Amino acid sequence: MYVAVKGGEAAIANAHRLLADRRRGDRSLPAISIAQIVAQLGLAVDRVMAEASLYDRSLAALAVTQARGDMIEAIFILRAYRTTLPRFGYAQPVDTADMKIERRVSATYKDLPGGQLLGPTFDYTHRLLDPSLLEDGPVDEPEQKDVGDAVTMRVSEILAGEGLIEPDGMLPEDHVPGDITREPLEFPLNRDLRLQALARGDEGFLLALAYSTQRGYARTHPFAGEIRIGEVEVEMDIPELGFAVSLGRIRVTECQMVNQFSGSAKQPPQFTRGYGLVFGQSERKAMAMALVDRALRAQEFGEDIVAPAQDEEFVISHSDNVQATGFVEHLKLPHYVDFQAELDLVRRMRREHVAAKSQGPKPDMKEAAE
Amino acid sequence: MDAIKQNQIEPEKSERHRCMRLLAQATVEEMRAALQSVQPAPEVFAVRGPETGLVMVRGRIGGGGDPFNLGEATVTRATVRLGTGEIGHGQMLGTEKEKARLAAVFDALWQRPEQRGVVEALVLAVEERIAAQDRLEAEQTAATRVDFFTMVRGEN
Image (tube, rainbow over all chains, first blue to last red; front, side, top):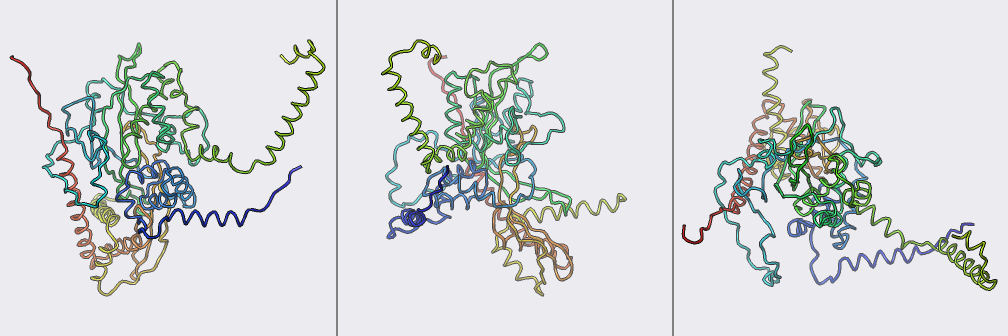
């Protein structure tokens, strides 16, 4: 028998009204504008865009406010919004070699063409709370220097010159890039699908997995070959015109991880690679993505699969925080009927247990139970 | 198509390409101000949109390898027809409908030789604004370039 239970409409309506009140908070304080969130909490906005898999700063900032700063809730809201929009098409792949660079560092070469550009980084700060921010005091304008004309060459290109590193990832000819927003996941995945899933994956989950590879669970001996942050142009074919048109620019973070060798009878040893590309400024996520990308290529390199970070089905099935939160959080929704059934079951088992005990041990039954 | 005709079309195409690229980065204010100087004010009919949708942005494996789907971005596009018959398309990242409509109007106006000057002045101004901003940011980044020096310790 299934009994539907109704009721709770008034409680729900009032709860949402209370939520709206608490979200706004103290009315004597000015409300935060979307423009302020975009400008001053930009990295929170970037994280929401990356994990919602939707690039739109204003909408991501709106989601952050609506979610009272709860990042996964904001990601959920933005992810839900994208389902309401039609898909116009696929853009041309962005060209990260042509990036308008805001930061670029390499841990493998000190003097590389284009140099080490620190950009707006938290690195080398002392992580001390800054009480001066309690006042809205003046902030110095950044220093400026001549740009020079050095081309910011990729580190992978430098190594590729000597054949010391595997080339950029290639898939079989005539392979059409898979799209996890259009087709259900079917394991094993190609690397393109894995990268799409990792690009929207939860930063904390990927960070923990990446860390596990460093601690010995699928060691890949990584070096941060290059990290670059900056804007790239997005171009899309316009069928009416017969050529691709620029739609504007987006900021992305790219990480090229250089990992230890692979070689075979046919091929001399060379460095292998992991790749990370993420919407917005998020090098922690891009680095974690690159480490996990490399770990997930274990099979391709004939490495033993011994650790969670190498298990494609485990990693990709659990990297999406919207899915994860949906399933974990659904547990708080009414399960009254399920629980009644379990209660009945445990009571019956206890009755049987007592009955069995009072009759004394029966050797046959014990054997059967084993 | 014979070679001479092809040679005339290609620069035309690339010029329109440049205009559309810059119109995608023009602000509503810039376009509204430029539209003031189009006399008589053009008659504009909506053909499609403005409408907001998504494009799937792609990256390349390893930076230069085969493409993969990175994530979507919001895009707003519009198609308009002028009273004189030209069809214009406007499209850019984001959700600003008026921006897409105005960009489409300028794409259509660009096809009218007598209005091309206005459109070119507009996109030139946009180009200069972006170039100045890019230069400023590149110089600010350049100031964070590490100048390594080697410290020598001890005698010889």
